[in-house]
Length: 127
Image (cartoon, rainbow, N blue to C red):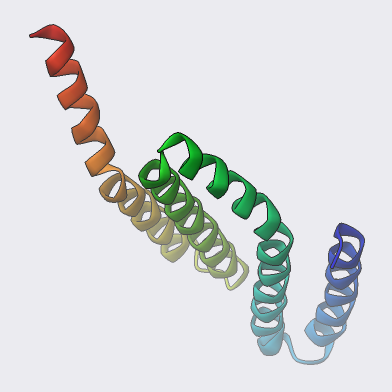
């Protein structure tokens, strides 16, 4: 799939969701969530060659553990952002902010081993 296809899916989804919102407003949020997940799947498919390329580079320079953490943090970021936007679409702003906070905490926890390695490097340099 291409970016043009992604844009086409987004525009068609927006038109369908707009029609659904007029007929049954309760289903509009669910339809928007489904469309969002479909678009995210397309984006992930489009990003696969980039991920493979950068993964090969990370392996060649010996930074696969850093790349793994970066990729996981990116996934957490996308998932939490998408979930928060769906919550906002449903009118749940407080829930959306909690999802974003949980995502930030998850990324910090995920990066703790790297932070520990940085402190070890700094300690070795200083002492």
